Length: 82
Image (cartoon, rainbow, N blue to C red; front, top):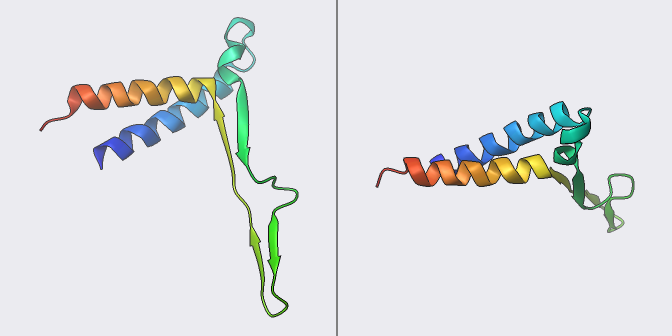
């Protein structure tokens, strides 16, 4: 449970850090991101004539988030009380 908290904190802090560094020329590389998943403009649609299901998923991750997730896992390993 604590690991999930650390990872979520790393994701949120990394997203904030990426937004803050986007306009700083020498730190703009931290804001480089890529999206994974189905395109939001054309989601997967399953039409069964009686029911129509629409599936969509999109996730974006930046360099700053990868770094902060790694730091969160490192901090978890240092604070893990077994």
